[in-house]
Image 1 (cartoon, rainbow, N blue to C red):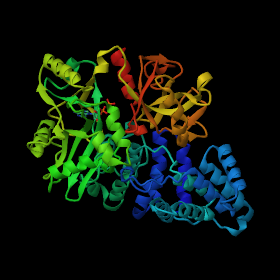
Image 2 (cartoon, rainbow, N blue to C red):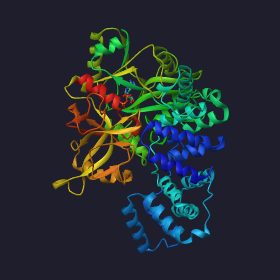
Image 3 (cartoon, helix red, strand yellow):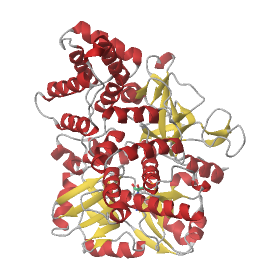
Image 4 (spheres, protein in one colour):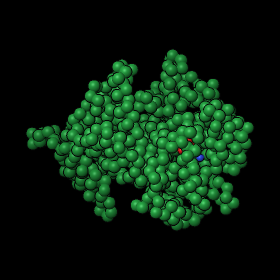
Length: 604
Ligand code: ATP
């Protein structure tokens, strides 16, 4: 497959907001890729050279990209004048890809007769981008510039747009993982893309069964390329054989919320296993003879930042293979839980780790077991998994402990456990259905969280995505004064506006808003953002922020749940306040529109 064919698909995808429309385009694209091209095609669609958790970033800095553009024009990278002109072009276009497209268009225009259409293949483009991403060490910046300029010299203007965006780490076609899995299923079945409601029963069953197999494999392997390649080379049977692998992160299970402990007890049919909800960092730990690897909630590798946890796990579980999950917490000298910020500081630390380990030692409170030496345990009931976890841990370890747990069957006991949890510094409790399996990658009522916030009049916090910003006035002039926030509509693959967020920021945070959002600025409203409100600057949906609101109300302005509760109205969060950054979440893991509707209904 040629890269220019892929670039044409990218252009169509970019202009298509709906999930069904995107799925159709993807099915067409899959139809043109050979099995051996699946990996490069999937990676390039995601704008990456490896799954996120491998931590291999392409992201060449803006300055270097401008220098590569200068080289591609045949100008000197040392000429300040050239660089200033290119910088002006970039600001005029508002996007590096569009700037590269213009540069290549101008130089090719003059020499069009010398060039036929570009014959860069997808495999070759991917190989070059991968080489660029993996180039490190001294002199690597210049080497990367040369690689990019070489690619641009051979590229058509449209190819230049997407190659540059990919290399800048800013491709963002907005293809949600679930949309890609829909496309894989529809492509394999080969009857075109239709809504399941338009299908015959047998067709629907076949499509849904394959879709479920694909999603399960993805939940185990967290890599769409592996799933797509297995489907293309060995069909659904090979996909079904993709189990968990030690060292490869499993997509985490997530919880729902309910308003009262009584409702939780009813939902779990009278028996609840309750645990403390620790306010720390979720860690998925893989231990095997190959070593220990730690992953965050959004599946980023944390191994290097927590050498103490790695050493503790390696020593305690020596010679065994297991996958366990827990919450990493900093405890003070008296064994009390220190605030979330402390463990978060550990996470951000890349240098001087010895001092960090001494300053903020970490204790891991384990709460689940996804695999033990005998293989995956995720299909076992939670009570059985907990028993295995306790067995694995044996007599325990000072800094690797089991989460506090109690199984009860009445509300009074739940209240007592909740009070004890809060008194000891937990942010609430997690209620778990003792009979339920571990459902990787899904949010469901097998886990229900109950936090202190719920007992107050306010709405629980939501994790919303920044989609734009407004310039500040007066004291905030020159800074962003407020951010436009959206919830994720996971059915449509679109972010829908919910509120304008301008409070809860201290001066230090306000000052950093602009630089923090800089890499996500978009030249116009991205097709995947639904908002009537026009901010001064648009963002690609990427950054997740925790927001606490006083209430949710019907609104003629905001677009979340538009027309769902009342014609001509959506939902808005009133008096929203910023509470913290949620760097541990991706834009598709943010609070969904469905959850917002549920919050509105339970608080209404
Ligand atoms: P929140 O914003 O409320 O922390 P979340 O959206 O990050 O939640 P949820 O799945 O809704 O994720 O809540 C579960 C989170 O609570 C887990 O990701 C984990 O980090 C944390 N947690 C703390 N203690 C436990 C526990 N005992 N069992 C499971 N998760 C726990």
